[in-house]
Image 1 (cartoon, helix red, strand yellow):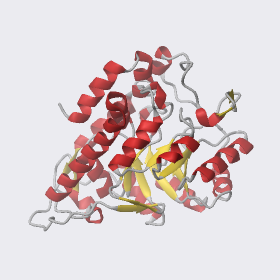
Image 2 (cartoon, one colour; image 1 turned 60 degrees about the vertical axis):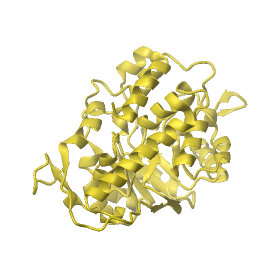
Image 3 (cartoon, one colour; image 1 turned 180 degrees about the vertical axis):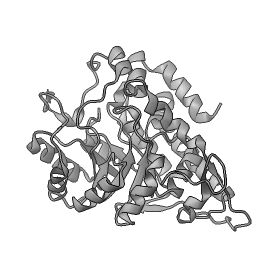
Image 4 (cartoon, one colour; image 1 turned 90 degrees about the horizontal axis):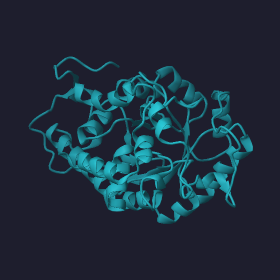
Amino acid sequence: MHPIDELAQKAQQIMSPAAWAYLEGGAVDGITLRRNVDRYSELGLLPRVCVDVSAQDLRRTLFGIDLPHPILLAPLALQRLFAPNGELDSLRGARQAGAAAVISMESSVATTELADEGVPFLQHLYMQTDRELTLDLLRMAEGAGARGIVLTLDNPVPGIRYRQDAAMRGLPSDVRRANLESGGVPKLTGGYLDASMTWKDVAWLAGQTDLPVIGKGILRADDARKALDAGVGGIVVSNHGGRNLDSVAHPIDCVASVAEAVGQQVPVLLDGGIRRGTDVLKALALGADAVLVGRPYIWGLSAEGAAGVSRVIEILRDELRAAMAMCGAATVDELTSELVVAGGRPGAHPHP
């Protein structure tokens, strides 16, 4: 069994059924959830041979952060559902593996506490109907040392998640949304999603900070251009891990057109279904500057704590390095769309 799959199996045995359902749940029938993983296997690699790959370089600089590889931790909420130390161990594992992290607005450990771990991080936000609360969260992130704000754009209303809702009726008493409480009193008194948010609101937020605001959940080229007009400093091509809208397009089929639309003006990241180093390679070759990994590092967290998180990132990094060498690429900049073919057929390129 693949070592990441072994960690998933071990994590399922450790987690409560409710926590596992929350982590693994998808929208409605789970079509997108399954497709997110399976789609990568439908894309083949067309390697170049007889290329000197003796000196490889996986480094990336994103949002002013010098990274040894292009694999980051995606924002994932309420991690004390999965392991006692929650996000603390996720960031410790990230530090061991040289990865940056995106801290969820709904972290079960306060961002101000996580910042003490010394890991370069971006702060995730949902735009709040209470704009003052949005600004409070923004100022908190700035004060904690965030290197950017990752704003979710694709979630105006809650996703319909039958599996999760059947298994989890509420949070355990020892798990809280640490960034959204003051003295134990919740700051939110209702839904935390703003269905009225438009590009004007994105531009407003971008104008409130010197940090780059990175729009997460973009799949269309025209939306990418609108995001640039709104002043975003980065884009995450994502379908929310299959958790909100079922049968939505896969990020790997959208990243090339989004990257072309932004024309290297801002970094483009891909989030969704990454399970192997070759998945990372395909995402980079088709236009992503880096990838975000979600569920796999939580499997590592639950199974082995910080060491498990580090192990997942290191496995993906090592698989990426090996795949790059065998595809004739010594650096990530040498990964191009010519290396990826649809169905393994030369000349059959993925949908742009």
